[in-house]
Length: 247
Image: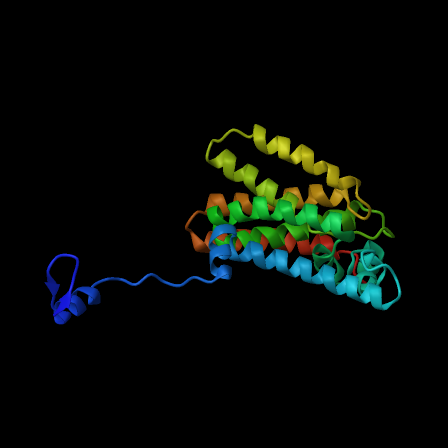
């Protein structure tokens, strides 16, 4: 017997009682952050930050100021330039979405991604959210290829972020919510268009791409064949527009 606060307790009875008690799970900081902000969102932020650090390091090794990370050859090879895409550099429309011109550009985009992305990931789920993100990238790339200056270099995650705002608009319309707050945030984010290397045309393309993909998700609902067919159709159209001039 063991002394207790009141009387004595039998060791066998204590052991039997503890056997039915669920022990709390240990959570790492990454798991807690993933539940709070979204695993996909944090992964996308991590990729963008990693790309910035790599380009900054390479710029420093080239003897340039590291924060002028766009000066390194790797950045120049990965950024979107319509002429080079048409000339065979097919990867540029995709890789450009993970590059940024300096710390301010990176910080603004990652803050927007954290705010919009985490909430949209909770509402749509990981797979659908990532689908909207990637289709938004293609939407922005398509607009740049069609309407942008052929020799102007463009990079940044803002095409995808505008796509997330377009997605939010569709979700809010579907849920019959007030859109005034979203319109205000959209107006504020237009300021990003004045940063060097960022394209308003790309923003609008991303906005349309994200809205189109989310419209498919909303209309398809739980009908998986309709969802897959709709997203495939939107993606195919955007790929044709992006690579129409590929030679």
